[in-house]
Image 1 (cartoon, chains in turn blue, cyan):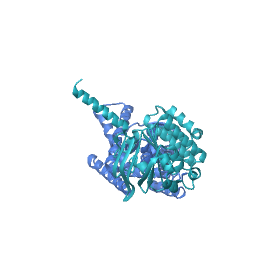
Image 2: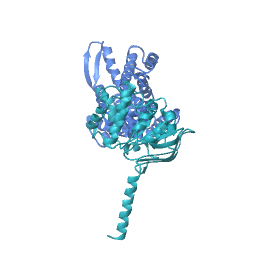
Image 3: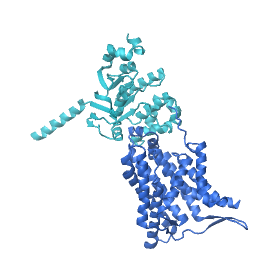
Image 4: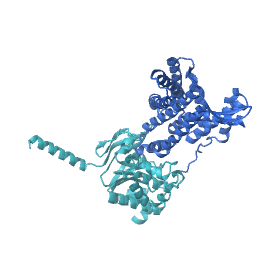
Length: 305
Length: 265
């Protein structure tokens, strides 16, 4: 029972991070029908931005309050990563819009390779670490053999994720921008007929996706305390898997998929073997897709005409 | 006042006169292609302020293509389209919409996974909700059916209801020029009558200019001030609604066997 509870906490934490990244995949797919393979690397870049900003704040500016530093890091990382997202769409995808379907996909793979190599050259190939942050936590349950421990980091990760997802949900469901975004997703041409600037809406979608990936990047750095140029790939693929599992195009699906992948991975590592955790996660994906081809919350393609 | 000053005045007056005499929408020699296939071949057409103009023609004649070409999607390969004197041929679609044109397009194109209410909000997005409550009331008065279904997802409604929504959505932007592509399609005769009455009211009471594409040629020509006949991407005939209704060729091609034949015979 204690082991289970502990793994549940660990899994939800990891799943939150996957969910945040998965939203970027699912939104971009929803609006332009393309898998943005560079999204994992955008996440990695945001981790580096977070690391650099954090070091500037603490080492140069001498900010001693960790809470304040983290808040600034989060905001700056979201803004700068959002700019990256905007620039990538502008340079690598928009010129290819209206081209054949595979073109932007190949371009995305190119951007992915560019980003990881750029970071490798600019920051070096070795793992970069932060000093330990936010140590400590709450002991939830204690028996002779096992302690269930909820660290402050995990609290923070889950809280930040919950707050941002709520805000994001509000943005998409209740604001004019969110409405325009959903309209473009359903019928771009019609949205343009109503005066919606479709290109601008797509750009903003990329910015939003990148900003949420930045949140994930900051939390990832906080959680693991280390990041390397190659760290975009695996979390990126996992988050993409999460988006597909939840039903690509569906926002709640992306979050649900992220949580499921995180939980599977953690539970498999705890009860079976850590080496096969990825096999487990991807096997579940395969099985779910056999029985629900459009994912758990994905919509069936049938629509009344 | 100096002579130069008077000259400027005269010129300004001329410019104003020219603008007043100019049609709201002027399509000149417009050709549109899908790949290498010509859908419109040198179409000339005008819609004056305050008019109801109808375009009739068989399936595949290019009526809907013309409607969409006005909005730049697809773009005209040659020719010019002017709206209120401004050349809009190369403007992006969303900028054209912001000039005060609205369209209820072929196939209705309601946003299927949005509620009726949200669809209407989308129609009003140009104004940022300034007149939303008032316009919503007007649309609901026009189509009481929509009022009952404001929270329903548009994709689950019947074809006729979606048609009402598409027209309502277009009205929400308070257009100067309203383009309606087959508003009677899929509607019960009684509802069709309601829609045509509504079009007449919009034109007479609100002074809205209306460009109407219809298969239902009899109703459309009865309603319109002027009409055009489109055949294979070319305008073959034009005239007042009455003239076209009485024209034997129009009768034979578009009115025989229909409601029109019975009443005009």
